[in-house]
Length: 96
Image (cartoon, rainbow, N blue to C red; front, side):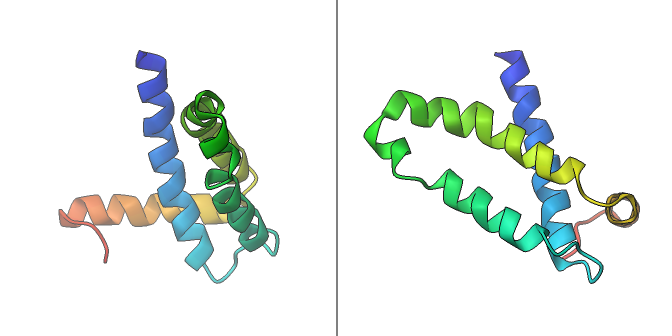
């Protein structure tokens, strides 16, 4: 169970990084379609038809796919996101 919580903590960080990358002016061309496919995969009808597979899908497969997309981001976008997060933590708040 602890591993599942770690996976979701990693997923939350990846989601913040993906959100930053989507707004970044130097984002790769493939990022918008990949993000759209992730959203469609998250709300697919199989989640409602077969509840057990939907649970496995939402708690395991989806965070892993999100992490895979983030791993393919260019290094400069990932480092810029890290610098922005460090700046926000020093200011004591989140950027709006």
